[in-house]
Structures are given as structure tokens and as C-alpha cells.
Length: 164
Image 1 (cartoon, rainbow, N blue to C red):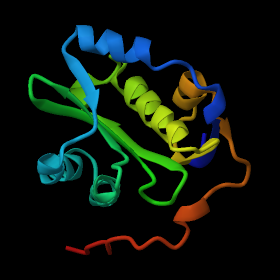
Image 2 (cartoon, helix red, strand yellow):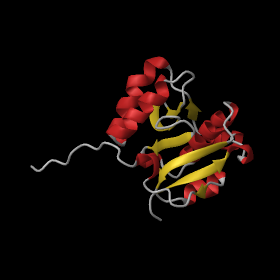
Image 3 (cartoon, one colour):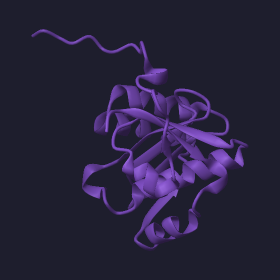
Image 4 (tube, rainbow, N blue to C red):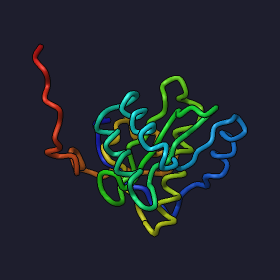
């Protein structure tokens, strides 16, 4: 499926406690980062993903209250998720370190974020620029928003390609 936006009904979310509990029993904690962890988190996102995602994590961590969650195991960052970073009511980006994927960390980060959005009063969340939609459909019942490419990201500045 091409990159598109999706919509989630926050008033019909699956519970998050089971996903968080399974991870906690394996030593993975989902939580909001502390202020002193901001630069470590942003640097980690830049290293494992991109400058654009690091910028979005920076915005989410600067919000009051913050709108970023991290996954931590043995004092090591292994995943993150943000919302209200590119636009209010938008979930994303989300990323899990490659060697930690497939363990439910992304699901727990997604559900923690969406439940937090619901607690702030949002009824719906948009998920911007989704590639494969199956994860979001399965985890939170998200549906594709027709004709949403490129959506909000149209005209976004990009780093010029170098011709070395």
C-alpha cells in the first residue's frame, strides 16, 4: 500500500494494560522521558531513524505536558513514539530499534500514546504518512483516509541531495 494517512477512533481503543504488562514482565518499560533525557532521546532517534523524526521528537518532548513515550530496557532506549509533533491530533512518528522489533514494543508505544491522546480530550487521531497499514488496522482499528497522500506533508522541506 502507498503511503497514506489513517484515522483512529480514540473512544474505541483496545486496553493498553495487557501490552504494557507483558513488556514489563520482560524488563521493558514504556514511559515518558524525563527532561534530562531529551537530548539523549533526540540523538537516538536521529541515529536510528532520521533528522526529521528527531525534530518531531524534539517538538513532542518540549510540549507541556510532553507527548512522547520511550521504551527502555536495562537503562537502554529501544523505541519511541510521539504525537502532536507535526500537527495537533496527529500520532507519529514511532520507531523501534531493529533488533527489538516483533516483541510488542511498537504496539505498547502506540497504545500508550493513543490512550494519552484520549485522556487529553481527543476523540480521533490521525496517523500521518503510514506505509504498511496492517499494523495500525490490527492494533487500534485505524482506517485509511482516502486521497490523503501527500496530505499534511505536501511541500515539506527536504535536505537537498548531494551530487558527490
